[in-house]
Image 1 (cartoon, rainbow, N blue to C red):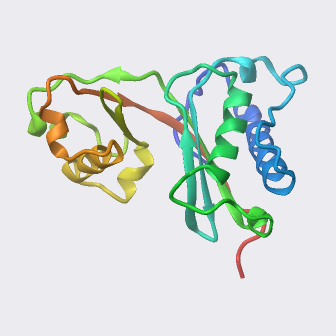
Image 2 (image 1 turned 90 degrees about the vertical axis):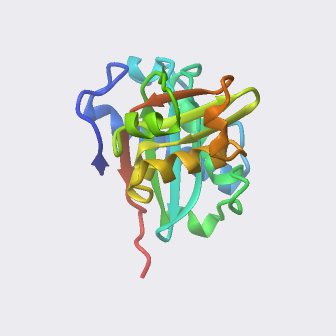
Length: 204
């Protein structure tokens, strides 16, 4: 298991992280094998930190290739429920990928990202914005009316240039870089604690 970040949010400790993966794996199993698309874990036996409202993303890689990434940006559901809901959505409702198949369950890596609160980022122009975002640290969300695009900080590994990173955030919102010059646009940054559990069975 690899992690990013040290002091965990929501009162979590490292001992709680395997529980989150157990929940994500159970959500994947139930939704993929039994079509239980609304499954949520029982909160009663879970530790109190997993009851706290949280914003999470779940990212799936099957055979080393991205196979879904879905999440929430505002803490509304209990952490345990948010992880389960996003695991199911990443596996079956990411429009970029086909639904996860039963034979792929053991070949799928799970990454869980815990998001910090969104912080609005004031800027003068696109160049100023590109200077202010911190590569490898900040996730970015752009919002204009109904348009919204977001990239997690992990994406800096593939897009290390701030200009290209922000252009792809705009693309996620269905827009071009000009979105950043619209006075109605709001740009937010956030950070994550991320945890990765390798696929149970490595591909041979």
